[in-house]
Image (cartoon, rainbow, N blue to C red):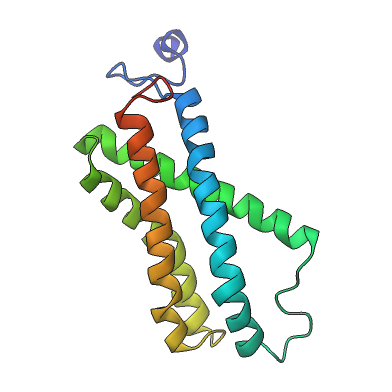
Length: 160
């Protein structure tokens, strides 16, 4: 236990330290993309789909500050998860475009595919929606992971 205290919580036995500053700045960079992409998809595709398929629910898909703050928190967590997934994957398999695509796909599978499968399974969306929304969200997370690849592999924010 004393050994852990001496090394610090951010260092593993291999001596690799987690790059907190680079992670936070990379998450911020990826988050800009994710926020823009999410708003584009929501306004053009998701909101109209929700209003149509859930028309029986009063006030579905409202447009007010608490909703946007909630989605802002979701987008930021999604960005952090995607950047972290890329970093973990790259630690084992190396920094590459292939690693970014695989890490982005893993993030997508663990978030959007899970969500949309449940949404369709509960009858809250049409089966046709699953052929529009998930592919667009895959592009979103793969691009976010490619941003992480670019930042970490080129050591833009000072850490690999």
